[in-house]
Length: 193
Image: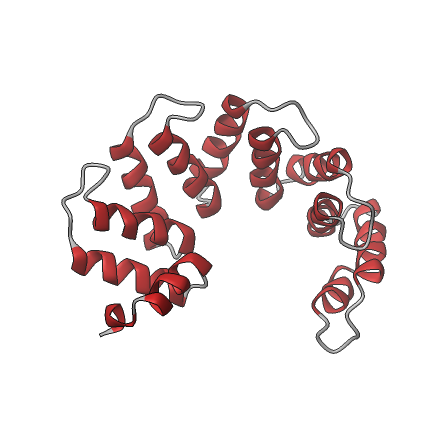
């Protein structure tokens, strides 16, 4: 059911139908499929095929996370960071992202690094942020590549300004799907040379 739902969601091989995808994910989630729990949470968070309901999104992600789904764990952190479905509490988000980051989740590593860089929920430590972004970028996280590139561009987070490293990481971020990096490359074609 989960795979079929993805086909309806993406419109690949089957007509694009968010409502049908949500129905299938919910059925599979109720049978204990943790990926389906994650996806039905996404549906409720964004109003895809169902009425938007951040509380239900949070509840499905908790069920999935309790069964080991790391993407759901990361999204629970977003719920606390944004106050969607739960009371806003960035310190709880940081704890959740730390746990997921320690398990190697690069999305959580990126979010945790953002917190260290800005001081949201933790004591600001830009050098630690850069170290975390570097580790996540080296594992292929496009968003971390983007942030790391900007640190090299600005000479931030304890790094020396290095335009060659900026170009390297901004290109890698774009190649790995980061929309902001793609915009930078489109606006500055000389970077690609």
